[in-house]
Image (cartoon, helix red, strand yellow):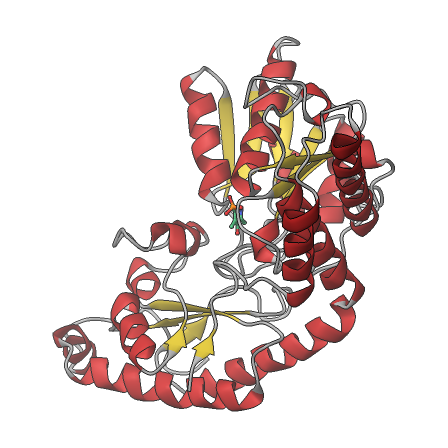
Length: 400
Ligand SMILES: *Cc1c(COP(=O)(O)O)cnc(C)c1O
């Protein structure tokens, strides 16, 4: 059996998105910036995509939607814009979480080198930040708060409407990396007081290499890519019209079917959680309820996540240990350690990210194989032996 359970790393292109992509590749090859007929029909495709995306997140105006090369670029541009524009007004302080994606954390580190001050808030043990911590971190000179909508590794959903309200009250810009949330959780940028928001096509069955930055009208953006006047002068480069059109229909399809799809995925997630619960000295990471519908992140003491992952792959089960972006380094996940999971437990963690294509049979197969693979590695681990004979202390309780 083959089980794809790594949808937080990337999703497969949906049929709707694929059809749109092919239709545009075949029929719309004009440059949307050209004034002739061919250019203008391509421009219409782009306008349509912008309207679709605006509708999906309840943006007031389609001109608040900017197309980028992906979630990373959208994150970079949001942070750099707020920092550069507000530094001129003496605001050189930024607030974020220590469990954000590296597109946020590395941009923050770059800004620190330029003289900005960044507060990295630590979430509670369930992976969710205390809104009072956000409120208390905001100062007179705070330019921006950037808190992700939902975490890519352990799925915790942050209190976005509450943070939006605090930022509005304090007159501070609010950006959220909603790459994992788009098409999975309802998003309303107006009701949630979100000033800037990032999304990425390939995380909701659209193509890779295209993303979205929403920036409320009135927010000044600074270019990350300089050149022509595309995207209202804020993102140079001839736009990827087929990719953008396909991304927009994928987002719409995901949003239109969100309730039905996500209740199915949630049930699969909970079946997997139930099935892993009886493994001793193991735990679910992240809040059990306020988590992404498809996310299961589990720590097993005494084993290496990478060994489990590669062994499960031989059984046709594709999942992740830590995030795909850090899977080439053997450091434990900054997300798990950042929320207070002990390093030993973080080392033995696996992430399953499920989607509508998964079935109950697949989940039962995963449960069976995880049990056997964890036992296999524990039985040959000297570390596990130390835990068993009491030379070393357990960091996870025997039962959840
Ligand atoms: C995948 C991801 C990104 C990066 O998006 P790309 O389109 O791959 O650049 C950023 N933030 C989060 C939370 C992600 O999961």
